[in-house]
Image (cartoon, each protein chain N blue to C red):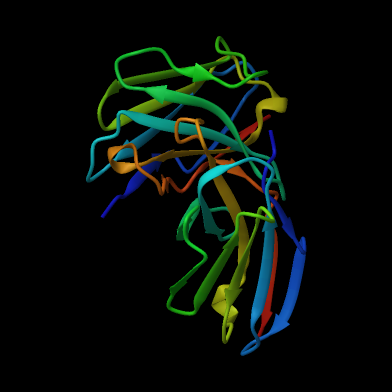
Amino acid sequence: GAVVSQHPSRVICKSGTSVKIECRSLDFQATTMFWYRQFPKKSLMLMATSNEGSKATYEQGVEKDKFLINHASLTLSTLTVTSAHPEDSSFYICSAAPGGHQPQHFGDGTRLSIL
Amino acid sequence: SQQGEEDPQALSIQEGENATMNCSYKTSINNLQWYRQNSGRGLVHLILIRSNEREKHSGRLRVTLDTSKKSSSLLITASRAADTASYFCATDPTGANSKLTFGKGITLSVRP
């Protein structure tokens, strides 16, 4: 149980394109989901907390207009990287915890490459 | 901010040997978790130890927690080549609304 699905697994696109990444909890409801960014050989950096039915909470230094988060249902959160540029290239991972309790369960991540 | 700090940063051992990884943290916590990440994949939860627990076992994994020293260790016994991965400790700080803070990770290589 507690499966989190993330899609797509890999995106390659041109600079200026907006890219949407989906995170779904397949067998549980998630009022809260988390979005992370990971640079090569580095740790996960929390970008924002996605809250169902309300605005996301962004970590310091993360541009909310650049990284749009929508959590319209109890099983789906989306992260849209708007007008992506090469410096946005990274590995993005989402997670959710059933009932809001630890541990968190992670999606398989999305490798974003902006040319 | 980075709270968990693992050491060593990289570990290379022979199959069958034990692997010990350490994690230190700075603030009070509700629990500490260890995750595994295969290259290019998401994280897989391995084990969670609560702040009032001192030791926990799961299969070949043994985790200890010393809240007075703010440190934890992960022991993998009888390692296998398939254990090759990056391992992260993550703390669930008190009052942080379930937001985990990850360490930088340890790269474990198990030679067949």
